[in-house]
View (cartoon, rainbow, N blue to C red):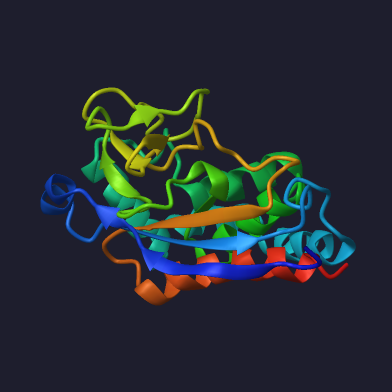
Length: 231
């Protein structure tokens, strides 16, 4: 494979009817990007590194403090409280990124895929996560939000972050076979690695977050992955 392309998406993820009834407005969108083997976990190129430096310059202490008053962070903070999380303890993804920037003195580059997801959440306020597409069941209903213990086994590993529990009845990201992550948590298993040739990106929307911002976050990460393949 000489480059990368968006092969599937964006698609609307399925929401368990019980979850949809209790949490109207919660949504998951996802798409799949094909990549060169090993490129997703390779170091970012100079253009993406420069973009992270430019974004770092926009985020100072006062900017981070004011974030919670902006519509999209406020929507995620409100939703966290709705599901029993304290956003001042378990920070929403955009505030996690902004706080890390202050502690590190800048947005730290990790690898191409991590950096693409970081840029997406910093620029849009909407979080994006990634799975190796081969770990996602291709059969309908595909990727979605459901309850743990309802027919899918949990992936091995220890995903952290807000909402990291995947015990019986927990809100999780899942397909027909596997629980991939807790809602707003890092993947439990199936993270992209050196052998990855396709990446499934997914994003979570909550009430008060316009659909266009959810799609923008996904496309931002996907385009950064795609453009890097031409280096």
